[in-house]
Length: 278
Image (tube, rainbow, N blue to C red; front, top):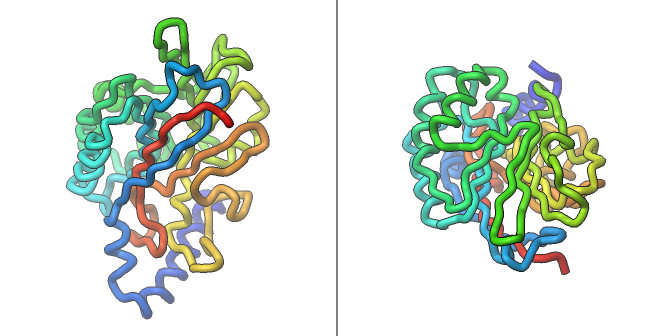
């Protein structure tokens, strides 16, 4: 277990203990009160043919003892109702246990997106059985984008969708992921852990999508998250953040790790509408 993970769980548990005395069962209810967060995000070099393209960003499902398959089914239904062009899945599909891989993949198979479904694994997927998780995702019709990418084309216009391996448990090869993209192309890179943005130097990336931090799960009004599994403080807690090489959108995620509770940090499916840079 990493130091960051131990600190995150201990801190979340301590925060929850204090909040539980004041809020009773509310944090446990909020953990299943998933919302749709709608945002417009500029993407550098976005061709006119892709203006208004929509992405459904799902991350940190954590199906397992504390996140039921019924809840995952509800989230999939929410996502399909958005009718996204692309579905982007940024890892932590299961909370370790191998028995949870096939059920969650079965639900992800129901996701619908006209331009495709793409995924990278997270640290929890690696702590379980990453080979089986990858195989299950492929069987569910999901394209794996770990250190690789694909072009989405509309006529003579193109958009690069790519990803890298998990920062804690895998390797990151943005050169392979971006392929023959040049600095005039529109590119989206998936990385489970947003901290990778601090080490990314490839200026071809126009937008990075991440999860991992859960928004902290427990947030104190006026302060933020007491504990985050990040080396960069509150910077990559949630929302649209400016990284050294590109903007990063960090989703609070769908499920929970550690205590099955949230406070002022509702789970979310992020619905992103791409627009050309101002």
